[in-house]
Image (tube, rainbow over the protein chains, first blue to last red):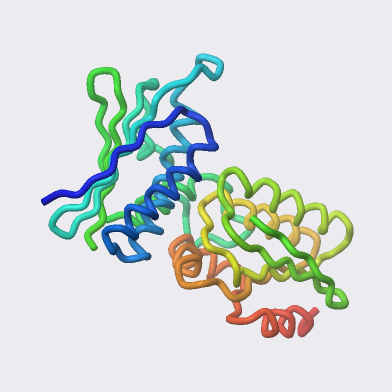
Amino acid sequence: MTVSLSVTFANDQSAVEKLSRLVEAFGDVHHLPQQAIFSVNLALEEVVTNIIRYAYNDNGLPHPIVVRLAFEEGVLAAQVEDDGRAFNPLDAPSPDIGASLEERPVGGLGIHLVRSMMDSVEYRRDDGRNVFIMKKRL
Amino acid sequence: MEISTTSHGDTTVIAVGGRVDTETAPQLEAHILELIAGGRLRIVIDLGALDYMGSTGLRALLVAGKRLKAQGGRLLLAAPRELVRQVLLISGFSGMFETCATTEEALARAKAEG
């Protein structure tokens, strides 16, 4: 049986912390491991922040972003859906984590963390909406 | 996010608690850069009370670290909790910045060499 939580909020940065608390509560209620909840929260912060920053260019008009968490058969899945322009967070370049302090570029860390902390990530464009799905086996 | 800053001779310890995320990281970054501009070039970031750090927090450390290195200074990290420690590991930051288990150890290391 799947247990799930669906949250819809406006494309405002202040929503990220609220989302984080809801995800933690979901994890608590279903006794999910702290590590997994932390990873999903971190990944969600990256993805949602990027959507808020880059998916819209209509001078800050409100848009709904929908996050759905589901836990079934040992897999925790988080889906983020928005109605912005075609934007795939997976396209951001990965950083060179072996680079020294001087060589290290400042950007690209967020997507690297998402890819490292989640077991799978997938993006698709579906009828004018971006759909980003991340999964972690617990 | 809570920040508490104390001086120990030439070294400054910045204790960060709570969440460092997209909303709070710029404040942390600005604070560290202000200290550097004021000539504080040996800085220990005490992560013992930090619950969460995402990529904007890492970015703040990176910007501060580069600025310090350019001025012959040093940035050390101390006492990250388990989940933050994993983020530092995955991002390669624990290889880039000296990371100690305790603030005392970091202070000793900060004072030790040049």
